[in-house]
Length: 357
Image 1: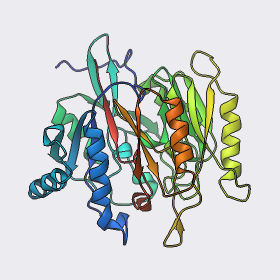
Image 2: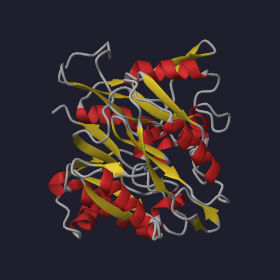
Image 3: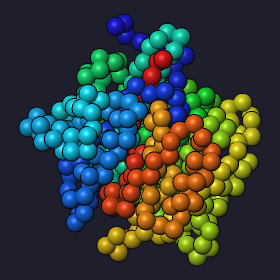
């Protein structure tokens, strides 16, 4: 394959566009779910089961000796192993939305590349050497060219840090993110970079023409403002966003501010965005810690939308809103009450590989 030196004409597709596969890392770090890890493999298996009905799953595991045991575990739920491709790739944590590559496609040239963004574990953890190598290992597995976005900071050229959960795109040139995550002084990704430099870098590599900057994410989000917990495209100018109706809740004002920004927003063609509100679940606490439970952390497959639920009175309301607005896909609820103890849900643990077809 000839190396691609110019990414003009490439774009990051919307998640609802056709996919070739989904990348998932098998759970192994018990420290991410202290006291609740026992049920986590069951949740992952349910998610893999439902994704594999629509498309191939690429599963990352820690060691060769795990493979037979994991296969037996998947077979207990009649998962077709022909749809699950297992690769030995070590990880620190399972959140492939942030550690995995972002793919770009150019259908005119029938070419696909992947971006190897810098990763600093949300400027929170010190152990991320395995996670930071995941995109390059996937590049080697698939024999797909990788490009590492670089930026100059204090005369040094370094990888630009970006997590997949910090952005959402409509596939046509509009991107949503939050100031809290990309511009905040807490858990900084790219210290010293201005808003303009950040926009220019993202625009260059993702072919973005329009940015929608929301303010803050939700309480309990240890990434400090990931947008995939609060606001998601489901069409080129159609957006779901989380709202909190309890005025005493800490999420009420931040989500209200975000809603006002969205109601005034347009897409890359200056077309007014249609905003659909989805209520937040009631505050969820695990071991006295509030976790970032949200229905917006869903994942599109080719045939379905996997939506996190939390045994909450608003579960059915959220599912009905999503089904009403996404009529061409099956809505599949996944109980994430234990999974969210790791401070992530379905979207956080998946990364799509788009199709050229």
